[in-house]
Image (cartoon, rainbow, N blue to C red; front, side, top):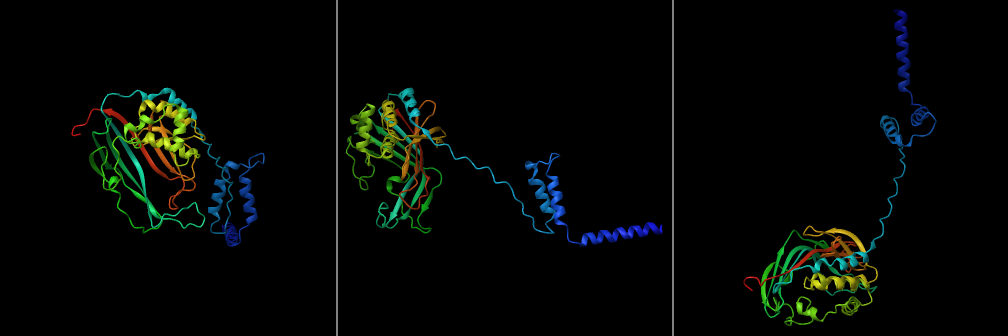
Length: 353
């Protein structure tokens, strides 16, 4: 028993000295590395992270351990947008919008979704001029549902109804920018007036049946019907005839009015397909729940996109996206400034009109 007790005491003293001594880091590293190799001596890379992390936890009270991980795999760049021309040609061929109701003395147009209004304080600066000071103000994004009842005989009564949908928020140049009240024609309300002159005191009076008013069906009597002629007409009407994005935007605006006759859509699509640089920006879900392909032409300031059904080419609405150099400094690039669904149908004259 005495010999056994003496042996136990000697072993205890030996263990105490080992625990009190500085750890042999070289030996420990060798053990860790040995654990990460298979029988052939090849490193087991897929199992490296977990053992090293465990070793770091074990050694946390002794010394700092640097865990080196292999760099993550580089994410491949997004594929470039495909041409939008095939979809426009497909839409012209299917002519789905041509199968619509042709009876009724009124056109009922519904536009709903996110829209934008911009307020600039002071003198509007020209940011194309190098030494021009930046504008100050804000852009408000808001949701609204617009309904129009447009008579095919413009002298009859017109009706417009606006209803807010969802919340609004502002993109501002300064945190405490003062807020201006919206214009009367952008507030919620329900108005009836001859020739669509709902706000004669605030907006220039519209000539009844005028040929310069895209909101009136009579306007389209003077619009060409053949694709090449439509394209030349859009160029002349555009603010920048030599800019393909501006010409495309003009075509989108007239379709989004909901008043462009649907029997014109096929050749309208063919005309837009003739514009240089039309791209397919992928699918987008519109406020009415419909999903469509968004087609547009790259633009410096703002890109206006036409949204059509990818299968049958039906016109669904539009999207507006800020370009790499937005008009106002407080608007970030690639910001959705508008996303609306558009529908129209011929209906009998509504009660009360």
